Length: 112
Image (cartoon, rainbow, N blue to C red):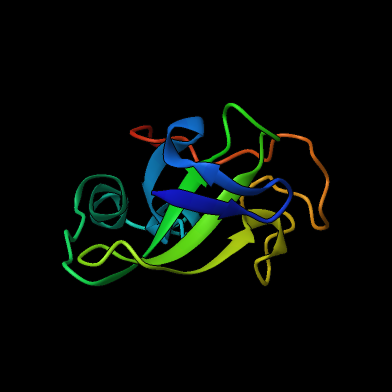
């Protein structure tokens, strides 16, 4: 699979680290009950079809990328920097713009 990095262009999938669903970017609020955090950290859908996933360009520009792709056909519909998502500034530690600095992703498997 070739992933279209917004900064480097099309690159082989092996240059990237697959993080999982973009649900990790939508964290519960600080006052959310423990059940909301448990759902956020441990419950995931495994859809066949369209998904939005997080990929880290580990062997390239060190950018976090959100891919909109089809898990059945492997077609990639779009790719964008996580930092360019609406409301990204302050929401997950990522800055806006196209900086080549590593944008922080939410901690996987930890509670706030």
